[in-house]
Image (cartoon, rainbow, N blue to C red):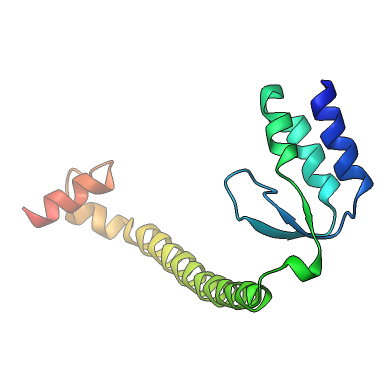
Length: 136
């Protein structure tokens, strides 16, 4: 670690570790809450290119509560609530899709019977071929 990067590391380590910080991720959000900023700092040092370390660390600054723009916390809470609704609805969609896929497998397995094999003399090996033959 070069001296500039070490100085930024020491600055962040000496300050508060929990709260709102700027640019925990280089492309935003500009303000982000963390319970332990050093987790992010370690991640930067371990996973990012060495030539990015200094630039990323120098942008991370603790924000005093008085520096947080009015309405920011309410906006974050609203966004989190919307995300929770989205995730709940997405989970229902995933459950419905998985149930549909299971029914499709049951249908496919139940379709492959000796009676159907006798009905179609040269039973195709692939489902696409079967669909094509039944629609032609």
